[in-house]
Length: 195
Length: 102
Image (cartoon, rainbow over all chains, first blue to last red):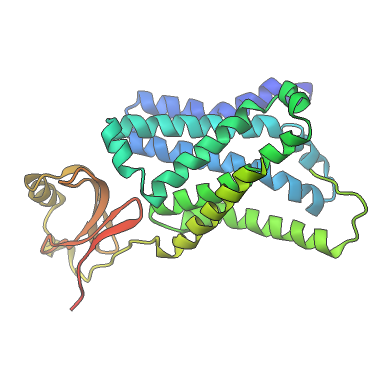
């Protein structure tokens, strides 16, 4: 039981897609396929991290939600790592700086870059020292993830050339957040509690 | 801190409003597969014109090709499987070419 609660175990769980991908790469998987998988997992983990706040509300402080909330930092940092690998694979796939720059103006592409750029300070500040140093600014900074989420959605829809898969992932998040907003406005709140 | 939001949020909102233009799907009224040209013929035809082909699949009764066009752009292109006519080209969701319907 203790092992399942162990933080290392949780990191191993988060690493499973990465391990599967490494095996696939060894077996000669297409770069584009791996790009797709890393992008998907990055988005999924980000969405999971975001869902936890409305879930705490919706499921009334359920134990499993709090269990995940204690691991939210790991989820977020893992999302960043998958996004980083995703970007590296893209760069390798495009091959030349010129090819990358020529696409940079496309909506489907720059949204991906900006989302990654937002992820970087978020990942760097995902530690106790930065929480202490930044104080209330830490939370303000981390809230940029919402902008990154919107940009990620647009990026996904355009590069995949399809709204389906992206919406399947983001609509639940939108609904959960909508509930949270509704809840905020429909209850009298004496003290702002930020999760 | 607040200044960043003032720049990023409008960008995000503008970006998301573009998703309604995102799908570049195409369908073909192509009938029996025995009348179709082969994928290899398609590859040969486009490679001759300067394309690089990564992958070809069937989508909506058309051939969907993933590759690089002669301009060096990474695109998805739809071709009629019988005539091998180019029907649609899209680059990361942005439509570069669409055949006019008569």
